[in-house]
Structures are given as structure tokens and as C-alpha cells.
Image (cartoon, rainbow over all chains, first blue to last red; front, side, top):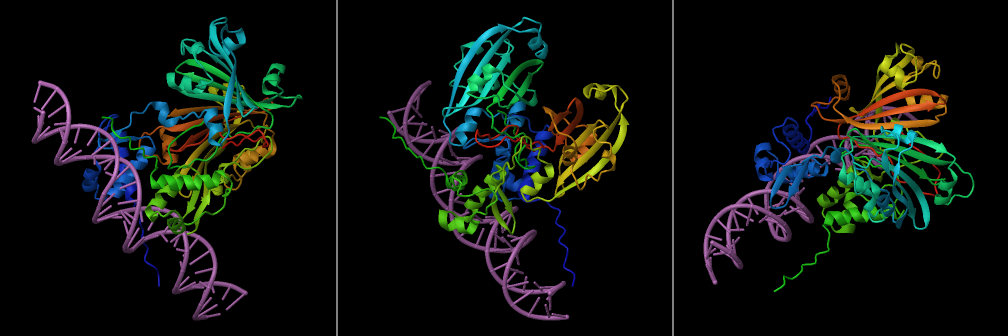
Length: 250
Length: 250
DNA sequence: AAAAATTATTTGTATATACAACAAGAAGAT
DNA sequence: ATCTTCTTGTTGTATATACAAATAATTTTT
């Protein structure tokens, strides 16, 4: 006997509630900051139980589309464009999240005049002033990476006054400007002597260099990160179609 | 009179269940791929109801720490594997490693003459022949990413004869040529209609585009990958000074 | 009028229950 | 032996209920 085909194309109910809200947001009916129906109202309009509605709204909140306040209501999240799409994870968090003790040393933090080659890379006129920082990040006493940054001063006028042993450069910059694009180049190099010194490398071992250009509108910051030999990192990783978008960058 | 401070350090129960699992993972008691207690067992060991346990495990799954299969069990998600200096991880392995069924569709595989802009990006003379492929990768029936590649023919003369439903393009190319440098550019775009069609996107949701240039000596291949909305991936991640270097790239 | 207390609304968490869907193994039929 | 069917255990979803906690509006008191 043939088994009856259920043919249940229907998505789960909580997913239909999520789609319903997303449609209202994407179509512009619900705009950022506006309050949406309460759970109780959605229970009647969608014909779902409150727990199901609650799950839908909770997941949309975790995905950064909604913002909820107990006792107040549910609102369409104001999407700082990059906040929903980009989460740039700091090296400090990375180390602490695996139980290590993080510290860093600021070896240089000053204004310089851009060399012609740097100016070209940053779309500047030669000898324009730029901010330059060199910071070594450590896990315990072991140097992990060396960050060498050049930043256009107009983006962060008070850059030189910051205490980057307390707030990472990334965190500081991300609090100031919305990133619109990132470019990465990865290469294997023989580090120059000054890099070997700061990373406490003995011989002439090859190490990884990751060069990052960050666009903030048309303006540009560049960072070169040098990793101690034997370091590994992952470009690419897990991704799932249901989870919120995030990009972690060291 | 000062109001009495409630001092309620207790986290919610579902959070304590999450912490419990995370501790077992981080301490190494539970290793990637191992099966964890079933919901029913956690109900007894943690003293929570099944719905609460279910919520904890569901959120950990959404966060990429666990992998669940209906009827089978819950497993610690396998994160970064491998060694070698460069390990370019294929999307197929990525999907299979978390228990999904991988498939792909070759929508285009032909020789074309490079447009002036493409030729400039690839360091070619305009209208030089290049190989062009468009492939959609799916997990189950859900399109996950769309890969659009241009390749210099002299690198892979038999490119057009391959069956890329059996071997991924990445695997094929890596078997031929040693990569010497990679460049990534990540951006958020509103996908063009033909991309929306292939990724089965309804509205005009923004999706991530990852553009990769690959140097093989001086020669160049380019790939643009478009991710379905809501996808997340990680650029950067865990790195340890003791483990062999590896770079996974999708 | 201002402050305090109360009430109503809304979200946050937790439980018990139920059934569906899937996977793997066991038992039975061929 | 091999295939089929059944059973069992697992996760996935949905509901009704309950109480806690935060916020806003209202009422009462001073």
C-alpha cells in the first residue's frame, strides 16, 4: 500500500511569523525605530501561540533585525549598515575567549608624512600627514601579532591621544566610522629585522603577513599584521543560512 | 532610605545549560564531532524542562557550536581542521562536515573574451580568451553561495572538460597550481537580478560578496562569491602559536 | 501641583504536554 | 542471506499555562 504523501511545503509556523515581519520591514511598511505589533496582537493576527510568536521575535532580535525592551515593546532595529553585516572581532576578545590573558605594547604612535609609495596605496598626495601606530599583541608573554597601521587623520583626529592598551585600535576606529569595504591580501614573507625583534623571532623563519585596506567612504586606512611563525588563522569558516551575518576580522 | 540591592547573580536557566555545554567543549571534555547528551538526559542532569534544554541547544546550534540532526543526535560542531601552510577548504567539505547534503549546479562553463575591465583586473590584454564558470552550491535544496570565476586558460587548459559536480573548482585548481598570494575584498551589495534568481532570493535583501584574486606566480584567477542573505562567515578566527599554519578559504 | 502608589501592558523565562519527522537498529518475512 | 516492517530513541515544532520583571500610564495621596 502506498503511503499517503503529506506534501507539506509549509514552512514552520515560527518561520512564517519571521517572514511576515521581515516582509513588513523590507517593504518599508515598518521602518527602523517603529514599534511593531505586540506579541499578544501577533497571536491573534497570525493565529499562533504566544510561545511561537515569542520564538520568532527572539530569533529576529538575535539576528539584529528587531530590538526588544521588556515592558516597553518591540521595535525595528536601526541598522547601522555595517553593524548587521560586519562584526569585526578584536584580537583581545579572541584571546580572552579562549582563556588566555591579553596584553599589548604600543611601540610607536605618532604623526608622519606619508612616503610616496604609502601615499599611493592610500590615495593621498605624497608627504601628506598620516597617523602611524605599531602595536604588539601578546597572549601571556608570547607575542602573537604585530599590527602596523596608517590612518588618514581626518577620520580620527584624536587618534594620537588614545590609550590603546585599554581599547584596541580596531574597537576605537569602528566606534568612529562605518566600514564600507575591506580588502585583504595574505602573503608569506621573511620578516624584516625590526619585525623579528618585536615578535621575538630567532632565525629567519617565514611568517604570515595580512594586509588590510579599509574603506570608509572613499577614505582609506591600511593595516599590516604580521603573525608569529607557526601561527594559524582561518579565512572562511562556518556559515549557516539561518544565522545572523557577521564577519570577524583580527 | 537606600533601596535594598537584589543582587541576583543567577543567570537564566537556559543560559546555564548553554554555559554547561560550552564549558565541556572549551575544557576539551567534549571534542568536535562527539555526540553530547540527548535532550532527555540533559533534562535530568540539569533539572530543566525539555523546552528549556531545547532552547539552549538550538541557540548553540545557531551560534555554530553544535550540530544537530533530527533522529540522530546532537554533536559538537567540527571547526577548523587540517594543517599544511595553505589549506583551502572547499564549500563541499564545509557543508558535509556539519552533516548537510551538498550539491551544486553548473550554470555556465565556457570560454569567453575578456571585457576590458575584466582584462585590466586580471592583467590581460583586452579580448584575450578566458574561462568563465558560474556554479551554485546548495545545502539540501537551499542555495548557499554562487561562485563566478574567470581563469587564465594557460593555467588550466582542460578546465572546460571537467565535471565540477564531482570535484569542486577549488579542488581542481589547487591540484594544478600552487597558490602564492590571495587577495580578498568583502562588500555588501544589492544583488543583480540574475544573482537573485540563482540564489532564490525574494526581495531586494543585501547579500555579501567576496571577491578573490589568486596569484599563481604572476598569473591571476578571479572569483566572486555571492552569499545568500543571512549567511555568515568568518574572516579571521582562532589562531594559536603552537599549531601549524593553515588558511581555510571558501 | 507634585510625589507616591497602583494598575495595566509588555516582554522574559519556565514547564508540561503533544504530536510530527527523522534515523537507526531490531524483529520478522521472503 | 536479504529485504521489509516495526520499534525505539532522537530532534523539531506547537500550544496552553504560569509567573517574573520592566516599563508606562493612571490613580491616589500628600
